[in-house]
Length: 341
Ligand code: NAP
Image 1 (cartoon, rainbow, N blue to C red):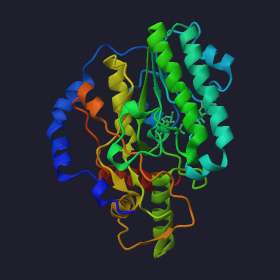
Image 2 (image 1 turned 30 degrees about the vertical axis):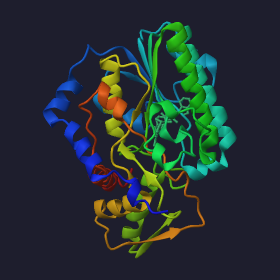
Image 3 (image 1 turned 60 degrees about the vertical axis):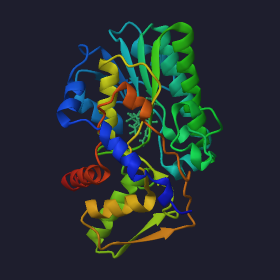
Image 4 (image 1 turned 120 degrees about the vertical axis):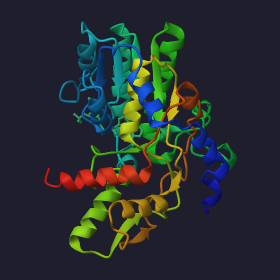
């Protein structure tokens, strides 16, 4: 399927540029707000958690080593009697497309336990504020072209994609759980719905990682081994929004400090095909000479799931995003500097 007509038109792009603030305006919003709350972050050792640590160093960051959140008593033990007024819930069993396809039941069981335990224990321990992460891959898969980009009201308009059904329905259950706590019990609980993420602290294990870390790793390996081409999965045609994880971390910090309690998509306005992203990555890694071969026997995943972040722009008009070419370059430089870790 041709993707040209699905990418933002010049008019839409200039519309986006019109609301983009100056760096000074964005910094002012980022730095103001109420004094920082007493925050506990689950999943604090993951991709988003480590980016958050850089800008919110006073929060408490926990991982599965501190508490296995698939166990209710462990979740309760994290919150009970502790001086915490806000939970940022990042912990999840996360994986790339093949890991999701191969382990649907385990992704469902782990995530539904983790999410239900965290939200229930936070509520039972009377923690007033909670922000949890959903994902744009939990949106329905079968919209007509004119329904894209998707907005927050579309979340329950159909089942999630088959390829990540287990992960998706567990996240959907958390969305309903949080909505009930907010609407029936008046807790300040809400969800952010980020698009695909990438960043310095990603999982770079080729067996389990997502598209961008796999792409960067393959490019680096090919350069080191003097290869002429890399093989990537699928047709290259699906459309994706890839956001730098540090941008999501900034927005989480703003939600905490500005007491924003609303379910919001968080996504870059850059919507690109998998093929275009690969070409940008080759440039970011100084590897334009490498050829790409597309292995069409491998799955593509959802064709598109791009969302609009217009609602977020209403709440926070100064949101800025790292351009993909600069973000990928940052990650590439980080990998080269930390090659032996
Ligand atoms: P990640 O890098 O895979 O990190 C997962 C975190 O969850 C780790 O800190 C891990 O702790 C913790 N965890 C996993 N199982 C646990 C358990 N049973 N008990 C306690 N902690 C557990 O994840 P991420 O990429 O930062 O994602 C953060 C959130 O954003 C997740 O909710 C994810 O669904 C969502 N999201 C991610 C993306 C993406 O592209 N990455 C896109 C949209 C939404 P250990 O280090 O101890 O294992």
